[in-house]
Length: 95
Image 1 (cartoon, rainbow, N blue to C red):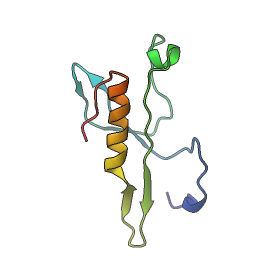
Image 2 (spheres, helix red, strand yellow):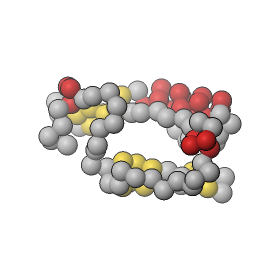
Image 3 (tube, rainbow, N blue to C red):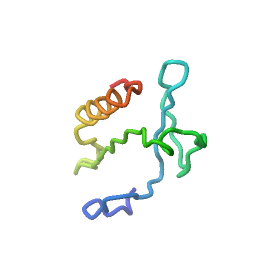
């Protein structure tokens, strides 16, 4: 994290040390999973591959001068992805 040039991040994919995942199964979202893998296991019939059913919402996190990490507009990001989920008839993500 200390080697990232935070002021000049590109728009698009940028490899990070970790990412967070949650899965919807049996009518509920799983606990968060932290992984360093850049790959996801996906069924070949996943609708996002064939018909474009997906929703994506990126978050921005910044380190303050005090060293604490702050997430930019988390509530607004959560509301926005849930509006997308409703439109796609997908389960909403707990805020």
